[in-house]
Length: 209
Picture 1 (cartoon, rainbow, N blue to C red):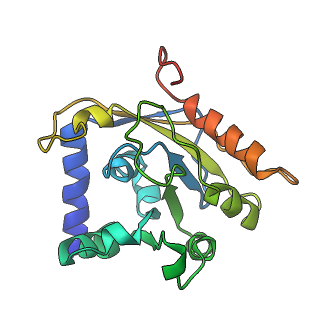
Picture 2: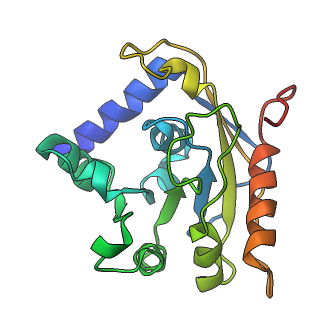
């Protein structure tokens, strides 16, 4: 009950602060999928999660760094119990389980994932950091897995770097048509294609940096 109330509060806060709305270029997949987005703040997953239809939201879990969400009792509780994050150990020497195996098990159980292939928050002037290889390996390990690009717009202005008081601004999450890892497709070619699919969801008028 407490976790349900906390999830409702998080959902309400996201809508109140950002007025977030979704734009869809194609229907969302019915089966488990991966929503992959640009990463500019710790609140990115909340906006994607908030605009998903209720039935899909219940089965969507963010992928996040264990080093961040395991610090402190409150953060650990929110990460594990409230948002049900799939916590990945980012330092290889500390891993006890392969991240692709972790994520594949979640997909096999019927849940979707919210993933940020840049791997860390983008605090540069570039639109996107280079993608890590996890999205590619996840798609190869799970043939036919729909990978849905989701561009989050304006959130970096809600809480600019160095500020502690959020500024209410309208945000959007623009979902594109799903892509797949094709048979025989190499890692570099796929990651560039995925990056282009995400950049194509930016608002009109924005140019690549």
